[in-house]
Length: 391
Ligand SMILES: Cc1ncc(COP(=O)(O)O)c(C=O)c1O
Image 1 (cartoon, rainbow, N blue to C red):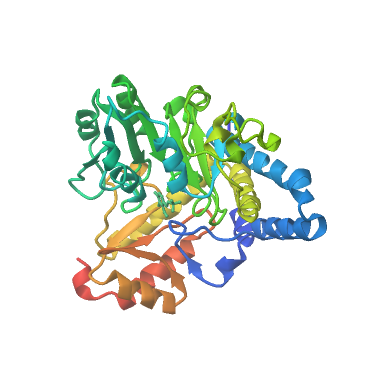
Image 2: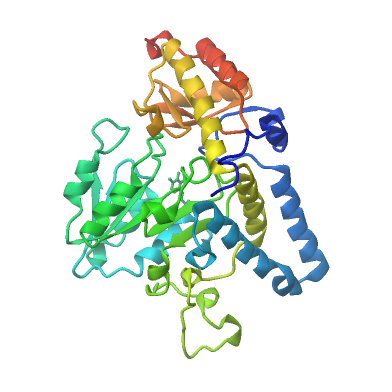
């Protein structure tokens, strides 16, 4: 069990103080980029000090251990084992490594949906010359895709279901346990892109039954760019053979034997080349914070802030593109506006940072935000937004 699930409520003011950027702006944009903590800054400084002091021997004395410790910290967060985790530079390369192992001869279909982050379908569309059929399910309401539509699309010709737990343009939380069952019933595998979920929502990969989970440091895991995490269920991690290879995925990396490639006996076989060590340091510090607070506590706090935001926005007449059921909503709220670009810019001029996507702004309170900040943004929107954008 993650620390924090039974513990009393954390001291949120103290955690807020860990993120100095929050003193400068009303920052409601973790959906794009999590705030930098003092701890991540100190960790990166430590990486730089080790580089100065030790040069290349920092690899053997410190940096490789830090990569392994990062795997362990992530494994703890999702209830996996360290040998089921690979560290990669971004989600796209994790997807490429996973997709390279699958046999599309008898199972050419890969099922995703139009609410998934485009990287996911792009990857499989780019494999069409190998015969991969990328199936993209439609969303009737731009918030979710009915599970029955997934059930209809997943068949005996499906190699993989590749979809998000949380949609980046609606905040909807998919039932990934049900998706795993549907995929497995047809002999297919499930890959979950959890970039918008891990950190802000608890996850237990064992009880959900997912085969692959990819996520990264950028957003809710507070690690910044340069590190992505790939979970591969153990039985697959020891069997699958990625066709993207490099010396970090070799069983005897430091033998430098060019004659035979031998896969590592764990998920790190999905790794290829030298990791971005500065990002590893920043990422581990971010993960430590998440594990210390505990995702269950974080979810409670972020959901309470988000529900407060939703009811304020609703009572002021804003049109929201969000799930009807609050239990299905992550801490991402979309406000439909005629000119989201202009509104985002005008909010930024007032020191309020949100993000825009076609037709909407995205507001994403995290545990380090406050109710006062919800009030600030709603007041600012009332000043800026034209009457046509409100009921
Ligand atoms: C759900 C989701 N998947 C993937 C990505 C990005 O993937 P990559 O690490 O390849 O840039 C993002 C956002 O930036 C995202 O929101």
